[in-house]
Image (cartoon, rainbow, N blue to C red; front, side, top):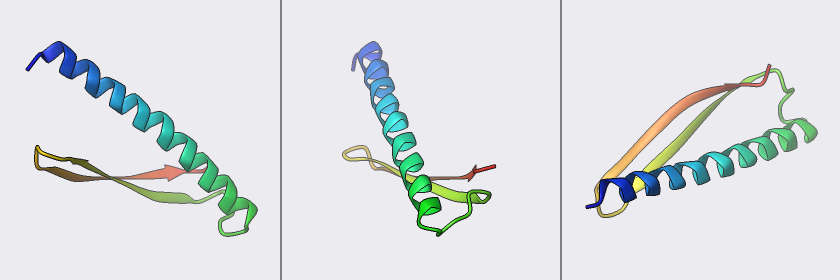
Length: 68
């Protein structure tokens, strides 16, 4: 395994995850506010499940997103 290539590939994947996740969260929150499902002052629970096929990785990451 080439450590440099491996590291760069992880970074590219995480950048894609970060950008895509932020866009999806923003759209979902704005839509929920517009639909009256939330007020926009809440703290929302968030979770992500990270899997890596072939390596046996399956882990959940939990957190909170405060809207105000």
